[in-house]
Length: 495
Image (cartoon, rainbow, N blue to C red):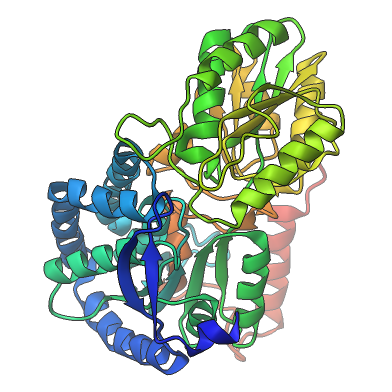
């Protein structure tokens, strides 16, 4: 954080394709962030008091607003990220579907569930339920400024929490739109609030007394988030990017696999945490696959006009990383069958497909976050799995195969895998989303995502007086002997 940024009171959101000013937003101070969290604490108590049904009704109301005004929101996403309207609409549609699922299923997932008390405690009725944490801080990314943070916001709200949302400084207008429309649906209390600014604002949110932080961004920033949260033992949920691999077996539908690789690697200009960046192809279909990818990738056109396939690189600093990965791959003996050294411009990156790239090259080891693919030939799928798993990242992945699709999917060390498609897991609200290693930890989406924003509460209720009372000083040697005999009968037999 520079001293210039720390002294700013406002900042401008710029269109990355044109540098046009999209909007001006406040740089919230630590004091303002803390005040927002205090307001959220009071709102959280009211929100919790509504119960699952009351919250679901209001979330469905918000979902309806988002649906009716989706084109308006897509305009804001398009202006702040440069991505095509169609891509903006896709992430909005997915966010709406996830919001509906969270609202509908929160009670079933988080409400009371009976558990078996076991023989020793058979006189007890046992149950577990999840109570809200209180106030959750969400720090969102710029690449999918609606879909990704909503995976935390909607699920945290459905679980009964208030939320303070800090969007990326590149997409504050999207965050403002979401918070404003929620306030229209829920005008009674500031259940969802917005704070905007740079890294200092995010750090202030970590230290403001929230019950949990949900963060999406780079591993480097994720480590800073963890360090700030460690000061107050605030738990964190982190999704920190990936280097996802695709496996293409000898019996795969080659054309479908090539189509999946190009879309998975280059949609959103490659700025997708679960995007395909590495492809390992069986030697029997390698040449056909490369030829199909070459043809399809060459047809992908960056730009800001209505007919462009992909938009600009939203964060200018990423251009240097993409350029370095391409030039280092070529210098190490790789070949560009599409694009190449001159593919990186001042705002846009031409699709680039690299082959014969060594496995230790930065284009294979590091997250590129641009419209590039590396394709490697393998002798069999065992080699493909070994190379795919040899990564510090472990987020998503894809397998194209007929006979061994599910087997190979299970062997990939990733949080999610799609078989004969790409990134499909993100569109299924009931599935958990997250990774391990440098991809972070914790899960959003699905029952697991709802539970991330709840506090497990175990309850026992005595139904009748037990013949063997264990929790009393009146328990004598006779009871101890009977318990010991019972345990021996239950667990002491030789197998």
